[in-house]
Length: 98
Image 1: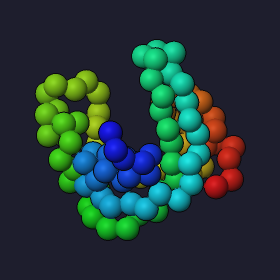
Image 2 (image 1 turned 180 degrees about the vertical axis):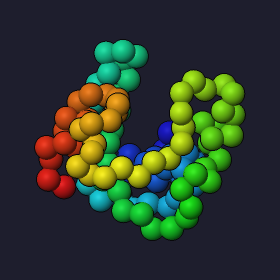
Image 3 (image 1 turned 120 degrees about the vertical axis):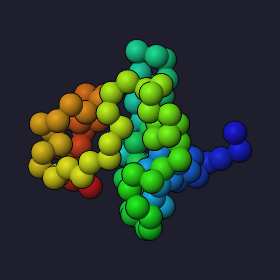
């Protein structure tokens, strides 16, 4: 509470990845039927930090989480080929000119 969406994005990216970003553009707001949540996606510009040094629970309590939480750099042209959830963001990114 008390944060703008942009402030939340910056904080979450820092906590989960360990990098400082600047928000540039809101890309998509997605209403998930799976868990009744709203997911918001932003295009961000890297400012500083080392990817993978985040202090959030996904990075520090890995035994409590299922799946992989390893940061990866993916070629823009390969986004459509990977398992990216939700499917709508993959489709959006695969055709969108940012």
